[in-house]
Image 1: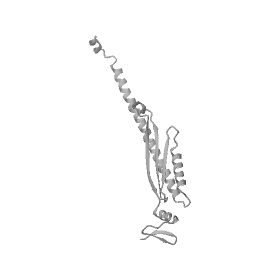
Image 2: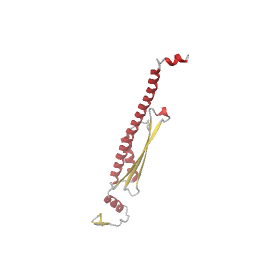
Image 3: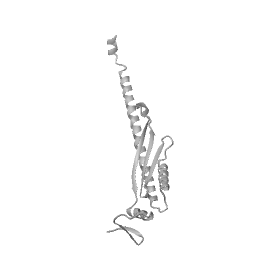
Image 4: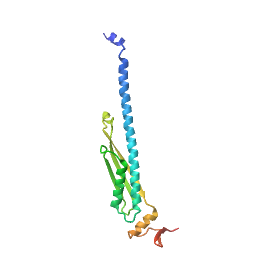
Length: 165
């Protein structure tokens, strides 16, 4: 009985194709999820850069306060991400107390398409955008507006602050 079973090779191609197709579909699905993650990370990076630059430009305004700068940065990042409610976004913005720098941390949870087949339903992307700093002249002017002492090497000349040569 077993010898007849071993000689009959009519269904072996079907088994091999089924195993290969399963592996191929898994690889294609993983590639699709990876492409979605890379695309989302690029989108988050661009949104964070745009938001921090908008907040950094608001630092230059004399009438701005830290709450308005943080609000502008958060609003710009949310507008740039343009994602549905399916992938929630968490944004944390920090503005230095002397209003010389802005930093942002953006975190988004991405639902994976083929991830549940390997027990990975979602992936969290976290991006920390390094601070945007204003120019030294603007920082000196901010120190003067707030009534603080100038740093060594800075002096006041005709209403503006310049570094000594």
